[in-house]
Amino acid sequence: MLFGLFLCVGLASGQAVVAQDDPATIGDPDAPNSVPYAFPMSGPFDAAGVDVRNTQEIADWFRSAHADATAEAFRHWDEEEEITAVCATCHSGAGFRDFHGLDGSEAGVVDGPIRPGGVVDCGTCHDARLADVTEVVFPSGLRHPVQGVEASCMTCHQGRTSGEDVAEAVADLDLDTPNPDLSFVNPHYATAAATWLGGYGGSGYHYEGMSYAGRFFHAPPVASCNSCHDPHTLEVAFEPCQTCHLADSPRAIRIARQSYDGSDDTSKGIHSDIEANAATLLDMVKTYAAEVAGAPIIHDGSRYPYFFADANGDGAIDQAANGPTAYEAWTPRSLRAAYNWKLVTADPGNFAHNPIYVLQLLYDSMADLSDPLGVDIDAMGVRR
Ligand code: HEC
Ligand code: HEC
Ligand code: HEC
Ligand code: HEC
Ligand code: HEC
Image 1 (cartoon, rainbow, N blue to C red):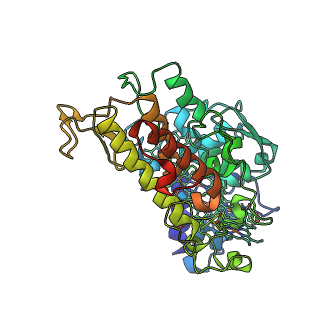
Image 2: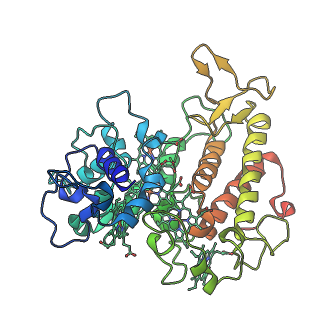
């Protein structure tokens, strides 16, 4: 069993076993620089009797998404020689080390080549040189100061776009005129750090004249990724939350006294308000597409680029010879609303990462669409 785990770890990192990648030597000041074998170099020996250190951490990590070598996030480049450099930073431990210069290469760029097959291995977070990484640059250009292993989470869970990318794409265009030059701007996945930094991180599309909540400081000591997530299982232990919150699950937690979704129900968790407003916003994007842009839209979260054309409005995605037809009738107004919707829903932990910021993005997007739709946002009962 342990032997199996250890071998898998070695294979997953896809490299010769060196100290930083040897899961058994992390935290061991006496570990030699290179530990090519976990087993004695000559036998006979009893596999079950071999002492492998850090077995708990290895086992926890092994069951987590970070170690799932079968996931699309790690298999996407299987057919290729190397992982595209701009993708490698977040899709392989080796790419991450290369990007931050932990492997001795120039920092801030993946010099590569990074072979496919790596996962978020131990050495991604356990590398003494990570202490030298003092800031992480976000897609908005923000240089956010970090300490220690926080640098790792903030690098990979920051998403790939900022609201500025959307603003630039739609600049000077007529708000409600479909423009075939516009295409969907995809914030990417698991964008927890982007949500967490809120308006300060600049990931959302910010409407003119509106102000946005900054980083969600929450309540120290619950103020960093690893104060809620176990860094190996990645799970969130609920008991510690209950010292401050009266609820029976994270999703049932609520502090807000007002209802945001028009239900007037403040007994449910803030998660429900966010989910409801996100659903309302997506409905409004669809209605707007059909009625204002004059080109119905279909959302299919399972395939890129997620928004497709349905010219005759029959509810089925239009098919061309080369596959489903991407939506091509974006207007500045629908693009920025759809972008905010996707950013918010790309983070399943949004309610814990920054509830106020995501509610603001959803509200402002709904309010913006309500104008041309002739809908009274106040009558909808939704709040900012
Ligand atoms: C800033 C870090 C970052 C960069 C850069 C990045 N990704 Fe990702 N990507 C992620 C994270 C985090 C996930 C995991 C989301 C999840 O499955 O929870 C992910 C998931 C994916 C997935 C899996 C989606 C699914 O349906 O499971 C694909 C495919 C992908 N990325 C492709 C790419 C490509 C192609 C590039 C380069 C053009 C890229 N990524 C660049 C962070 C990044
Ligand atoms: C995503 C980042 C991440 C990955 C991947 C990771 N760890 Fe950790 N690990 C941490 C963090 C953060 C802590 C500190 C936890 C704390 O202080 O409570 C930690 C703590 C530990 C500790 C406790 C001693 C110490 O050095 O602080 C050991 C041992 C350990 N990890 C081993 C491993 C092994 C072995 C692997 C791979 C199988 C691994 N870790 C993968 C982030 C990670
Ligand atoms: C090298 C990039 C990288 C680093 C560093 C990293 N992650 Fe991840 N993380 C990913 C990818 C990629 C996935 C998706 C893996 C998959 O689909 O199996 C993921 C998945 C997750 C998930 C689970 C999502 C799910 O679908 O279950 C959580 C939670 C998470 N990471 C938290 C963290 C935390 C906390 C840290 C810092 C201690 C961290 N990550 C560091 C890339 C990274
Ligand atoms: C206040 C506690 C808290 C903090 C701080 C926190 N998270 Fe979360 N996170 C959660 C909760 C709760 C969930 C939702 C889990 C669920 O519903 O299963 C979550 C979900 C996630 C997910 C999606 C997991 C999935 O199932 O797809 C990722 C990825 C993630 N967090 C990463 C991070 C990163 C990176 C940080 C630091 C920037 C962070 N989290 C900070 C509590 C927290
Ligand atoms: C030390 C006390 C404390 C602990 C522990 C704590 N929280 Fe909180 N939490 C707060 C406070 C205070 C707020 C309000 C913060 C604010 O609005 O600025 C809050 C707000 C929230 C909110 C937003 C609620 C709303 O209606 O806006 C969520 C969700 C949440 N916490 C989840 C969690 C989770 C999940 C955990 C455990 C991983 C946790 N909290 C642990 C004190 C705590």
